[in-house]
Length: 113
Length: 115
Image (cartoon, rainbow over all chains, first blue to last red; front, side, top):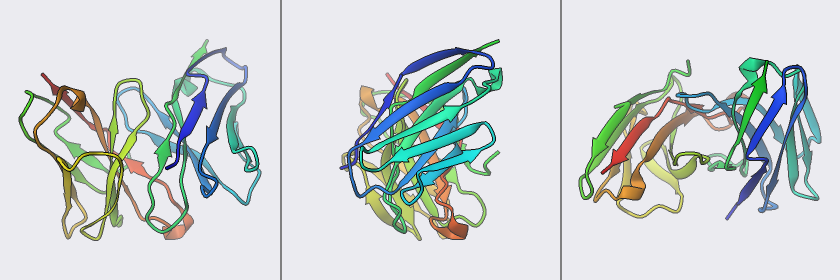
């Protein structure tokens, strides 16, 4: 089955700096890669996703890149703000009708004001 | 707010007992997935229900079972509780592929402690 690894497990940056989180996946059939943000005491919330037919996607300060050959994908947050502090999870799945999403172990991001 | 509600929010059980967790999905969503999130870990897929049928299962023993009702709400049942079952249990509703999105909408979870 699919296995998703994520690095680093913790990340601390100064406000205004960039943050990068990297993930790898094992199943070459995976073709959908979402990123979720989980704030303390809440459930995860989707912040951005990318499909395998796209190499990069941006949404304001957030961007995601995908390298299908290497089975790598990354999240980039620019101009970080204190409200970006949370746990971020990458995930992978096969975009069939009703398949499951496999999550990485998470990265705890702290943005220092 | 995702519109997904879970109950109870917290509960404490002892080893060997049984527990039922409940989830109301977001309006219009026909699929419910359950995840177990141990402290400091990512959510792990337990199973998914679509139109009242189990539609995929992760690596969890049969003592983890579920139901989905005609209104798409769902229950997670765990029998013969073990200490390792202590975790946050997350419910996520979705309409896979609907409107081109595969987004999971999570509730805030039920925190289970097994003593």
